[in-house]
Amino acid sequence: MTQAERDRLVALKKAKKKLITQKQAAEEIGVTERHVRRLLRKLRRQGDRAVLHELRGRPSNRKLPAKLEQRAIAILSDPVYRGFGPTLAAEYLDKRHRIQVSKETLRRWMVQAGLWKARPRRVVEVHPWRPRRSRCGELVQWDTSTHDWLEGRGETIYLISMIDDATSRLLARFVRHDTREENMRLLWAYLERFGRPLAFYTDKAGMFQVAVKSKRQEQRQGRDRMEMPPTQIARALGELGIVWIPAHSPQAKGRVERQFQTAQDRLVKGMRVAGVRTMEQANAYLEAEYLPWWNRTLTVEPAQADDAHRPLGKEHDLAAILSHVEQRQVNNYTVRYDGKLYEIERQDIRVGLRGAEVRVEKRLDGTLAVRFQGECLHIRLCSQPAPQAPRPVKVKMPHPKAQRKSEWMKNFSVRTGPSLRQAIEISNARS
Image 1 (tube, one colour):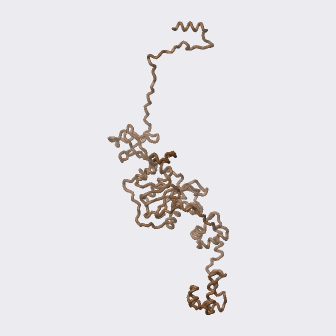
Image 2 (spheres, one colour):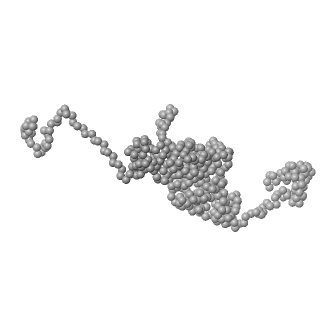
Image 3 (cartoon, helix red, strand yellow):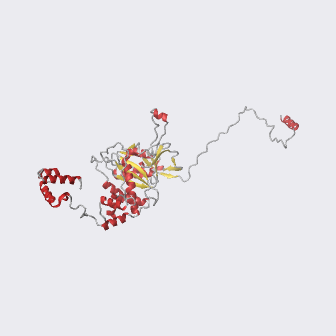
């Protein structure tokens, strides 16, 4: 008998002995006077058991059959469901096996079967909470996760993610290498799908900024670091009118980091059940299953309904902007790039082109484009590179007044040479 049931029994006995009225007993117990009269009649028939629920000790009328519990435990005992928690296991039982059971009931079954062990949450360091941005597209967090996504079933792959700070809307893709080209391809997909955000929030990786080492003494004196040229991604963001914000710690971009924690749990287990073994299959599962689930379940409504994304204009040529750009000088209407010589077509030769600086773009599809004053020039690869004229070799001539060296020891040999007297005579004769 619980303490609440004991208090109820004391109030009923007081009302039975006329120590208090039925109205006072009802107020003390928290029920109506009619229910107090009903409990008093039950108290005269059953005694103290009147305050106990009649279903105590009896199985619930809504209890699931034992065969259903046995079937669910047999399914979750399969190695493919290794590490599944009650919440995720309940979703997969309903979606794949048509077994509808609440996560709390399934938690009790898994604990009894030894498939789940409740772990107390450890206290982690609490960082200052930053409120979300008010509009979608004001800030997008961008990062890459290195993880064993295929659990040894295939090659090593990486997950690049872009998550909106205001809504948690997610766009992600698996790649084989975390390179500038792969990040630019995902950026291209984001721009075409949503438009240009106001800012991107990333870490300080080498593809976003050029790291400059400075001495400690200069840091203490507060000297500014030397300004370095932008990276290719930083240049592209500048041409698109997008602000790049560096994060000073992983906790600063916690939204994308927590997204990776969820993906390393649910996404990995989902690909295991689906039998994913290649990067193409992983991207197909990501687009068909995981991203729709995330954007349907875990996104939130922004504080302001208007979208901060800006549309792409005619001046935003993504093929030209999202490429590797370098400057080259025109020499005899040819441009040398990557060890090859390219000739500018005759119809594109114009005033001021000779000796000028041109923009060379190596695009993501492997093609090469040359721009001069904003216009693209037609070029062709030279079959035979033009030979470079050899540099003249300077020959050092002797000074006319320099003293001439004696040659009396020329062809002299100790073993086969003349005697000392003969050598003196030869020298005197030459002089």
